[in-house]
Length: 192
Image 1 (tube, helix red, strand yellow):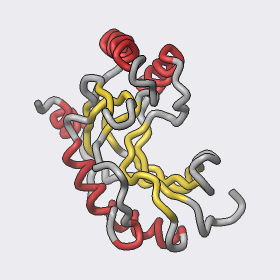
Image 2 (tube, one colour):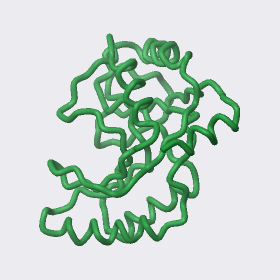
Image 3 (cartoon, rainbow, N blue to C red):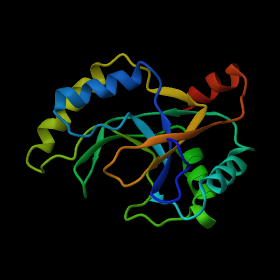
Image 4 (cartoon, rainbow, N blue to C red):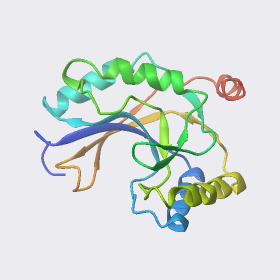
């Protein structure tokens, strides 16, 4: 990008680490999904850019400054009934993601979406209602047969921008959460 955007859409996401990223991308190939975004957890769903991008970066950086890194854990595969989109809900860490979303979804960054915020990773889809049960069974077999870790630390969030939702998303800036000791992350990841 040669100039800073002054319109379009923005979003804030956390990308998944390897090998989980590659595992979920391979699921899409098996399920023949047209969904092509890199596997991620969305913190701020797409919303119009209403102020300068530098102001957005400052707002996000200021809000995230006191927040330490944390661990999330993905659970069993489900689907959103309204959209027939298979997803992995976030179990451990969902409260922190919800708190971040509430803290960030204010002022110039506020935006009301059609659906309530649900911390998750989209797996594939959307699919036709008739095909969904078979595809969910197949996806669950893939997920249960995978040896990828279900939990991982969230250390970095990425601000994305697009001119319009169909043109592809560009990363504008990453934000690193405060580091905590590895022992604390391991303990947090083992909570049930």
